[in-house]
Structure formats: structure tokens, C-alpha cells
Image 1 (cartoon, rainbow, N blue to C red):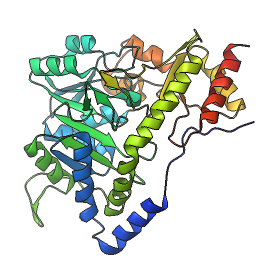
Image 2: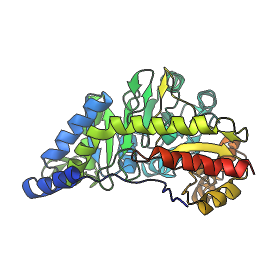
Image 3: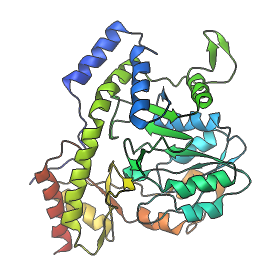
Image 4: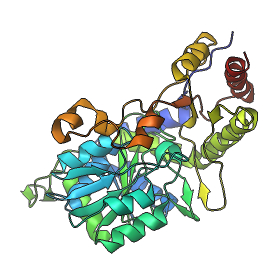
Length: 365
């Protein structure tokens, strides 16, 4: 029996050597590698500015503070990791949800349009699983109520929407470099991208204790900097990201081809002229999920579930806001149906085929 892990992080000698060089020859905090990484990432995404921070959560948190959501609402999706909503609360705003569509699991623009109001300060779509959200109508809705659009691109490094990289389209883009993401910095890390120089400067100040100079501070800031050694590691990974994303798309194509005729399984959208995903996770939707997961585990396939409890149904959010079951039915249904299959750049075609055979063996019994 083969064993296929869910992911397999890449660590090369070049990455380790880059970290060793940085720690021996640069400042450990805010060293030269940090600023080089920011410049290179901004160039990759296609924005004028990029500001590195301690995590993807910090990227969202500081961005929402910078666009002044305090006392206002931020419209987002209930189907994401809880940090997407936590940062709104931490920035003294109120999270408000609109349901998703069941094709790409992203914020539904029509439902978002109905949910905005006078207190909407920001709309924050999540490019979930590396699938770009439909940004044009969301940006139109945001503009109509004077709100900013913050892209939660934590899972979508290099994904494209109508020819542009996500993270370069809204007012702000936020990325995570957690070890399971399409690229990492060898630990926690995040990045904010924007074309707005004032926003970039404010976020850079917020990440560094609110400093104007060494001992002068004009805002209440945070200690949320990216370590120099992590930036050095990330610079090497960034050079490989485009190639890794292509490999993920190739793996996704094998999955989609091999599973297409299983009418009890719904597959994620394929790349198109307008939307090019990066398949951070390859997610299928199916009934009998627990039985399928048990079967795959018995076959040595590590499949996971993202995310089994929608944010509005998390105990703390029920306690704080009282969201009832059935409030966002598509998100709730998908939370009970999705299965994440193994996908990572070094995954061999034979491993992909083995996973497909394991799935088929369940449904063709």
C-alpha cells in the first residue's frame, strides 16, 4: 500500500544557506533581506508597495486598522479559516457575512451586494483554496458604498483574475507564508501589497511599534515584523513559486480528468482565460464524506477537511453575534461536503493516480 501525505514542504540547501548567510551577516530584525524580499514580492504581484509582517493574520489585522474599520462593518465570507473574521474584531470592527457560491466556494457577489449598508467600511473576499473570487462586481459594490476592498489572498500567491495577480486588484492584498501555503518563509510570515503609498507607510509603522523614529511613536503599534532569516528563506522560495504553481495546476488537471465521470463528486473550476487558480488545495464536494475519508485513510491517502465549521457557527461567534443555523445555507452545506486531496509540487503523477484510484474504488464498489 502506498502512503500519500497531504503536503510535503520544500526545503533546499539554497534556502538553508540563505538563512545562514542572513543571520551571520545582517541585522536579525529588519535586515537587508527583509527589504529585498518586499521589493521582489511587490514586483511579482504587480504592486508599487509590499510590507512584510509576522503572519498572514497580522497582514489582515494591520490592514483593517489602517483603513479605519473601527466602529464599522467588514463584509466577508463565513466559509474560511476563523482568522478572516477574528481580525475584524481585533481591529474594533464588526464582521458581517454573506453566503458563498457553491462553484468556487467564494463570496457570492450578488449576496454581498444585498448585505452591504451605510456602516460597511470594507469588503473582504477570500480567494479560497487558491481560486480567485469574482472581484469586478465586488469592487463595484464596494465603490457604491464608499468601502475599500481588501483581498484575503492568504492561499492564492500567483493566482490571476482577468490577467492580473490577485493582491494587486483591490485596495490592499494580504498574503500568508505559513508552511503549508504555496510558498513559505520557513515559519510564520505575511505580506501586505498595495499601490497606495500612504497605506503602505501606515502599515509599516503599525508593524514596528508605531515608530516615527527610534524612540518617537505617534500611533499605538504592534511588534509584528518579519524576521530577517525568514525573509531570506522566502526570497529563494519566491523564485520557485511560478514553477510550483504550474505543477499544482498540472496535478489538478490529472485529478479533474480522472474524476470527471464520478457523478457523485463535484470538482473545482478549471483554469480559464479570466481566472487562473493556483490550487493551494484541490477540493472536491461529495456526499458520504466521513465514509470516503475513512476509506482513503485505509488506502494510505491523507485527505483533510477545510473547513468543517463555518465561522458564524463557531462557539465564540454564536456567543458574540448569535448567528443561527441556516443563516448561510450554502456555506453550511459545503462545510459538510468538502474534502481536500493531497497536492504539492513534488507530488509524482503516480501518487496522483493512486489517490484517484482510491477515490474511484470507493464510488465504484
